[in-house]
Length: 230
Image 1: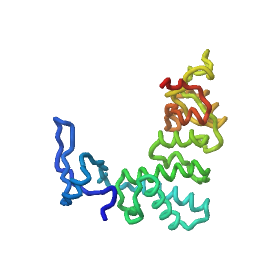
Image 2: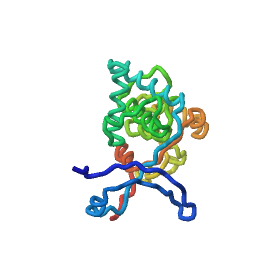
Image 3: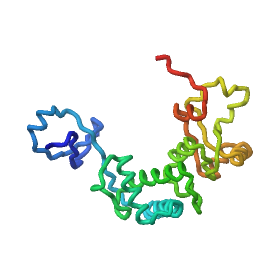
Image 4: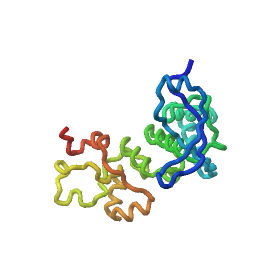
């Protein structure tokens, strides 16, 4: 019996610059199914062919080792469990398509690395290294720290920090619309350091950025936002 959703593998054969598109050859011979289901559109997942770097691979192993030391689970078991969990939660694939840290595409490992970092932040896994130095996607890490109320510099309990220094200067935080304002989550010590150094210098020192307030962040920190009238 045919699965309800078919996954096929094609090949990029060229680019149409005038129309701004990609030409793809997709072998398919089951014409009765195509006609019966009335296929008109398809979803395309582009496969990253860039080779994995040693830095990315070593970062993943360092992060997984930290989780293994914290949980008491064997390192090999930790690695395989997280690979399966990532595929199931983020890519919706099965264990039959398990990937290897030795030859997986760069974009897949970048996503896997973000997945591990998010777990470490959420569960408060202790690391004997500077977690920020093992973060590939800084905005995603900042957002994860905000959602989990963890200081993005040291991992301690944190409060919301508005990167826009104009907030609080003649503006009532309970009345202004916080939506899309740049924010970070910082502990009291690093919050004070940000104010002392100034936001630009602080960001450059730690190689970080801010992310805009969305409705999830607004709800977590009980921020005032303008509600949609529809």
